[in-house]
Image 1 (cartoon, rainbow, N blue to C red):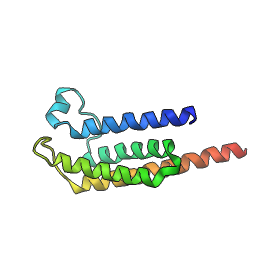
Image 2: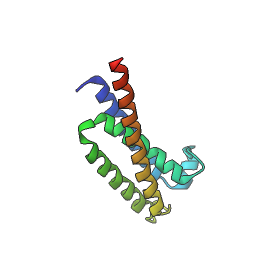
Image 3: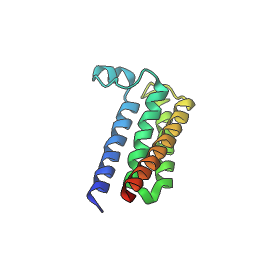
Image 4: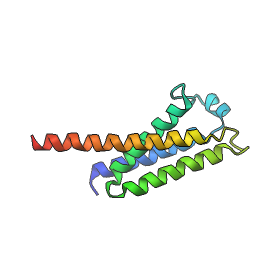
Amino acid sequence: MKLYAAVERAAFIFALIAVFVLALLPASRLEQFGLNIGFHSDKLNHASAFAVLAFLGTLGWPQRKARVVVFLALVGGAIEVLQGTSLIARDLDILDWVADCLGISCGLIAVVCLRRIFCRQGRS
C-alpha cells in the first residue's frame, strides 16, 4: 500500500469517528464540550460530513467505491435510528439521511473531478 493511500484511509477513519461523536452525543453535551460546530443548517451539516467521508473513503479504497457508498448509506441510516432513541435524545429525521446520501454523491463527484484534473496534468 502506498503511503498516501494509508494516509487517506487513516483520515477516513478519523473523520468517521468524528462524525459518530458529533452525531451521537446529545445536543446538550455538544454545547457543554464546545463541539457545537458546523453550519446553521442541520441538513448542510449532514451533507458536508458525508461528502467528506465519501471523498476520503473512495480515495482510500478506489477499487471498492460501491462498498464505501453502501457502507456510508448504512452508517447514515444507523445514525438516524440511534438519534431517535431516548438515550441520545435527538431527532430521527429521514431527511437527514437523504442529506447524507446527497453528500455521498457530492463526495463521489469531487473524487471524479480531482482524478480528471490529475490525469490532465499528467498528460501535459
